[in-house]
Amino acid sequence: MTQHLAAIAILVPDYDAGIANYVGDLGFDLIEDTDLGGGRRWVLVAPLRSARETRLLLAEAAGPDQAAAVGRRAGGRVLLFLHTDDFARDHARMT
Image (cartoon, rainbow, N blue to C red):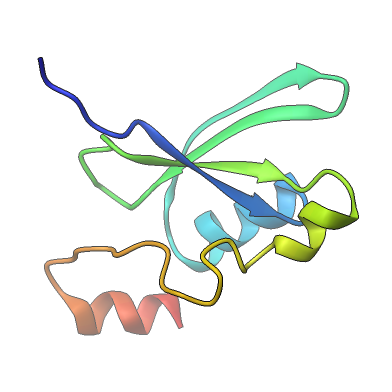
């Protein structure tokens, strides 16, 4: 049996801000943005031109406890490692 991680949930302050950051600032591809009703959405992004096996699910923080955890999901540690074929190019684009 073959397995892989399909998505990793990342808390964002709101969906549009998350999309602006990951797609606009970091250059990720927007894979899906589906309205689930009740103000909820299913938003998936993936690194630009990646195999898209692992995606990030942008989850809007619900309530003050989750809002306080935005950007701190790994407790101050590195949460994700992005492999690239040209670090200098991608670093310049993302900064």
